[in-house]
Length: 203
Image (cartoon, rainbow, N blue to C red):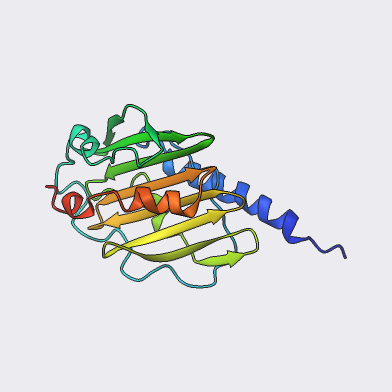
């Protein structure tokens, strides 16, 4: 019986989760087109972090803030980085709407993206995959749960230089940061530049 090596298994798992995340994040016309090519998966080693489900207010019980408001919370470029013009959108879901705003950044060959979404408590965008994330670590990368400014988070790394962080704010807003071709320090610079308290207080 032939044994598959980790060099064979890990790329296959990368592709599988990438497809699943793309399907979860792009159902019908309710999701942004951003993709996360470095996302990885493996056998779960721990359960999803407690208290991270989208179980707050009823779906659509509030109105999503305009994407122009979310744009104002996208950070400027850290030292050495250049920021592109921000983008935003409003999406229709069921009888309501949700919004998102994003901005791309560059530094040499490195690329970064910051995206903020207001789900209005609908299970849309990155919230669709939030509860399916599991913690694991392999020779090729990891997923790990944690907190950022008191909010639940997930961080992902895939060799050689792909990084990402999701931060769930009040079970309503999602902040997503990705860095390709950069370092963990680059990721932290973007993650720490965001005003999570201001986002949490949006109504």
